[in-house]
Image: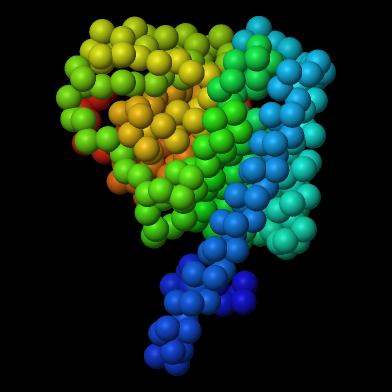
Length: 278
Ligand code: IPD
């Protein structure tokens, strides 16, 4: 089944020898399995985060503009168990470490707690973000906000859903009427490079927002709450799930690797019609 699904994703199935209906049914069953497992892992992880939200937290490390908590690691371990129990051949690339053979065609990209600083300060704006890449392309993405019980889920070629309901990006084209989220990232150098952008956008847009969770910023662009999200210096796990949500909701994602920082990216995610004048 998995091998068959891989061939479909590569577009290398000899359609002439396969009955088309059976071909589609197996493909959709395979994708649904990925999505169901991802949603279940995100919900279970979100439950753990919600349970611990008001409890004392252990800090593993703290820097000027960032905090790492023990619960980040515990949550990733939980997600890893749930994903790899179902798909033992797959690899996992997460904020709290990697598991398995990273050259495997299937790689789960996980941020167990996006918005760790919010979580630590008891600001109820954080989420679990889980994406599945096949040969480098994101094919499934889920983002779960456990405080508001909002689950965004998307897969390649399908309209995405928020708690089961389809959604689209906004259609605002005029920056003067737009709400734009700007991320400042977490190092002094990245703050210096994001701050001028924020300064410009504050004057051009109706409102700018700094919410502290890149994955939720992406989810909010996808479902039309924000018109765009911009940040320099993010990691793949922050935005992988949101990437497919924004694109399948009709928006555009421009994700560029940074030359000056390994495994870091600059991102502009938008509804696809707004002129950000960047
Ligand atoms: C951070 C948040 C924040 C963004 C940073 C991310 P973390 O992720 O998404 O909004 O500005 O770039 O690193 O550390 O809370 O998972």
